[in-house]
Length: 197
Image (cartoon, rainbow, N blue to C red; front, side, top):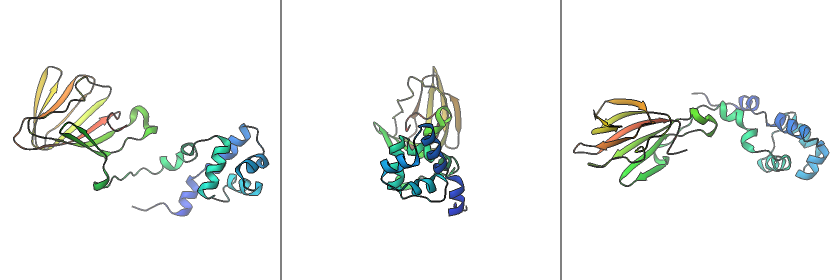
C-alpha cells in the first residue's frame, strides 16, 4: 500500500485555512494573534495561506491563542487515513476475572453510534463472560476460533463449535460460556463500541 507523500499530506491538511476562519470569526487581526502567540505576523499569514507548515510548538501556541482543539485542525487527515494497525504486542487488554479481551479493532471517537470494536476473547474451561448480562444497545457478531461455547441469549441456549459464527441484537441479556474441555477463543465484533470506547 502506498504511503501518503509529503505533497499528498499537504493537500489534505487544511489547518491554515481553519486557523484563518477562526481568527476572522473572533474578529482578531493577524498582528494580535501573532503577538499573543509570540511569532511574527508574516509567519501567521503564511501558515494561514498554506505556504508554511509550522513547528508543533508554534501550532500549539496558535491553537491556544484561538482556543481551538488540535483534533479540529487535523480532522481531514484523520478521515483520509483509513488504515489503523494494531501490532500483536500492542493490543489493549481487559480482564473480566479470568476472561481476557484483546483489542483487535479500535473504536474511533468521531464514528459515534457507527463505531465498532473487535476483540479476541479467551475464556478458560467452565468460565463465562459477564458484561453482556444486562444487554446493551447495538449488534454483536462472533466467530469461534477454537473450543466449544454456549451463547445464552435471553432464555435460550445456542451451542457453538470451532468455525461457527453468530450475530444478534445486543439489547437482550447474553453471555458466552466455555462448555468444552479446552480454552475457548473467539473473535468478537460489537457496534457501537462498548468495552474499549
